[in-house]
Length: 458
Image (tube, rainbow, N blue to C red; front, side, top):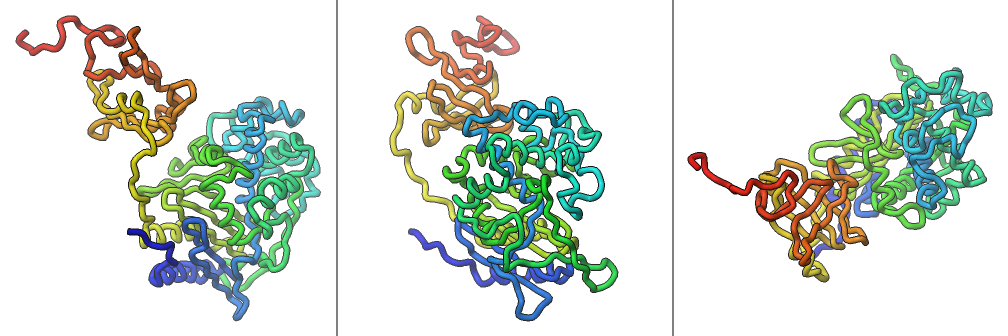
């Protein structure tokens, strides 16, 4: 039995509207617009405004601040995938003269390069980029405040360096690379470096009175790759769908999955940061995305890859509504009220008898594991009883498997055979797995006591 992709239930839509209405009122935002995407299509959108008849919609631009960093990260990973750079390259290899020493591209992407959080004064978000015409003006006299690679320390100048890296390798501007390589392929025609009507104006709201003050909208110059962009809920949902699934015109599915892998724990310890993406674990789920703010605007984008739900919330106020929290709650409302229906179980299209013979029970010493065959010749190793280390492994062309998560990420699983071709054991990063615990005759490190298993009275 199947069912069509139906719209959200009326009760779910009302819960979503209620949440953003409270956020706009309690956060005292002049306007707030939000949208939710499910299974690749916009499932709901809503807006609240202090002006009668002037509510924004999915085509209204707001400034998105640091969500811009995720776009910059995609551009950098494209360079890597094309073989033009390596993430372990020192930045100075491609962009000499920055004074950042051995800081690597990977460290910059994950904010573990040890660079300062901000530029020298004046505050870059509220001053013209023309005040910082050179990278030396962005980095200042003391660009590093921590040793590289020792900790996560969020750095806006770090993403300026990444934008300059893109320009140095491509030979044209960061904004041109963005347009050609991300915005046009994904159809994000309402994402731009400057405001294009219809767009919201940025406001500050007095902390102790219901009065507003206009905020400036500066061109950030060299700092643009850290926070320049204007966008809409419609465009950002397209971007979220790409970040969840990949798009070979922009970045492969495996590369966007790499963006979602933690690069360094954050200072709080309750969340993480990948390569241009924030990572927030929750009860049984993980959200990926980014927050953003610039004077006059706050923005939040989150997606749940397992439930295939994404949400964007944008508001034109310097502070007030916790839009990143609200966006996460919109995802949760949909995921809990209308959870994703699993795909039907289906047998594998074909089976390799040799791989099938490897499935079943294996032992690492006295620890028991089960090996299960997955699609595309992959396998999953699961400890019995739920305790111990397990992982999913993907097939390599050389006949081995590569671990995809946790302790065994990147480690090699291989079959070790005897001279007659029969299987002696599985080797996982030097750990020996045998069919029986400490199997006699198998190549167990340290050997097996010839007396075998015995009772205490023996």
